[in-house]
Length: 205
Image (cartoon, rainbow, N blue to C red; front, side, top):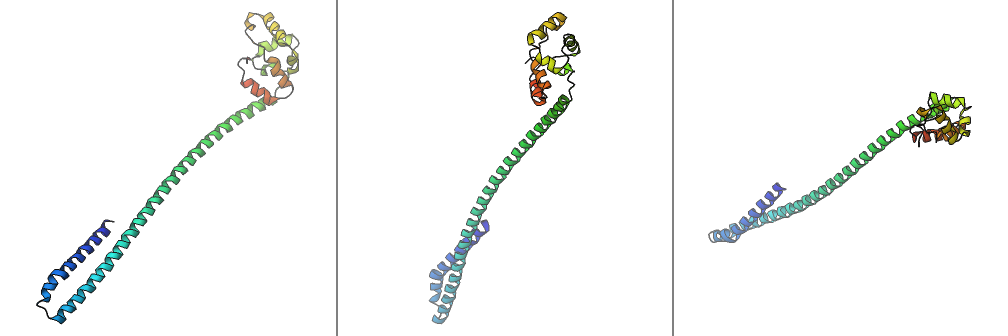
């Protein structure tokens, strides 16, 4: 841009110098020059001035074209910046989706493992019920509860009574969800049982 402005300024200065030379100095010299020589020199100066004017017009056109190109370049750079910003946003979304997918895959693997273990339950293994340990399982067996189906038929009140009869150390155990868990296990509803047990702590809801 600077070289073009310099070139235009140079042409303008040159043209002004020619005009001054023509209207002042050359007319003074025309007094002493023969008519034929003066006319020849005048014609040459006019031709040179015409060429300079044409070059000046061309330089001005080039300057306009350069300004238009610079404007288009600015628009392209702005559009590129917008596209890069959109691309960065999309990459961030993809990373979030990948992280979310990884978490879901991990949870699904854990759940599949849990369901596989639940599916292999022995119907006599009451310890698979959340809140029941080996000693409580033994107490239940003493009262005729040996399978999931047996436990599902028992009432919470009956289970609480068995625990209280076994001694004070078992009174803190809560059988409120045992029949519900046992019913799901007896019916083979492993997914529902897994979801229920995830919400329990020590057999309590």
